[in-house]
Length: 302
Ligand SMILES: NC(=O)c1ccc[n+]([C@@H]2O[C@H](COP(=O)([O-])OP(=O)(O)OC[C@H]3O[C@@H](n4cnc5c(N)ncnc54)[C@H](OP(=O)(O)O)[C@@H]3O)[C@@H](O)[C@H]2O)c1
Image 1 (cartoon, rainbow, N blue to C red):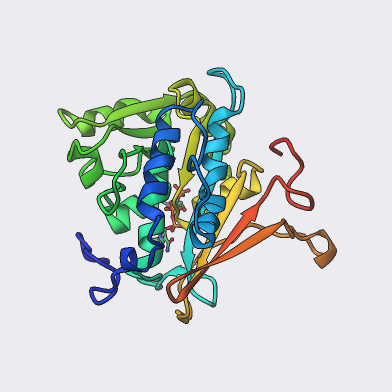
Image 2: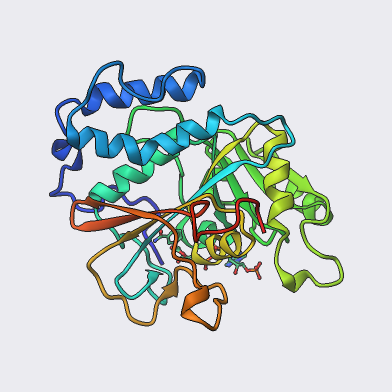
């Protein structure tokens, strides 16, 4: 079981000290662009080559805000997983504190600050009891969303009760009353979605397009899916991801909990091989996959 309140990935590391000198000003500019979508997504003048690489990494999240879209437009979705060299996001016991290092953790908090909402699966909430706030960086907390189609959680999770940020417990309408009863006076809200689970075949998993559509009607247009492996894989399989950040740490877990685990094609030639960029995050390597680029998904969700 993971510790309930992890503090830092590596207490000896100070990832902020490794950022370029002009980074703080650039981050402020990015937060301004997040708040005012019509503002330019970047600095007024030139920035250092190191900051330019960071800008390129975060700019798609700001560009997504400028895309036309009413309340019925599907959100733009980025998923991120921190995994071992052998493709695991946690040990077999579910311990994921920490797979990746301090630099990667800071990057994750930046992603949260640039998104409207962060979504995790119920398995992650049950095991990690996460906070999903931006406490390591300046910037707003995203709306926190727990995807729990059959409302299997008992309602005691910290993020449902701490009031640190608006929080949605997203479940199928048929399970909403049970979730509301468990929440009682807690500050989180149950978001009931009709047809999230197929009544005849609930084992098929949730209809994620419906889930994201329900979030879009709440004005949540730029989303971070932060795990676990089952949830990110389901989003990928449904063709709902625009971008994927895979952060690979130099560690071998062995028989652990898998990251991506969707059924792939039989032929290598049919596998996803989207355009990528790489960026070192301390000892880890971030792979930034543009899933809407050539040889990624088709341009519309599958
Ligand atoms: N390294 C990383 O980046 C990262 C990020 C997030 C999480 N994690 C780790 O990933 C693991 C969780 O991920 P995951 O892929 O197993 O699940 P997940 O994607 O977080 O959640 C979906 C899965 O959880 C199951 N589930 C639903 N309610 C549950 C409950 N109350 N208790 C336990 N499981 C429940 C679901 O089963 P049904 O579909 O049958 O309902 C489904 O298989 C944890 O060990 C966590 O530490 C790692």
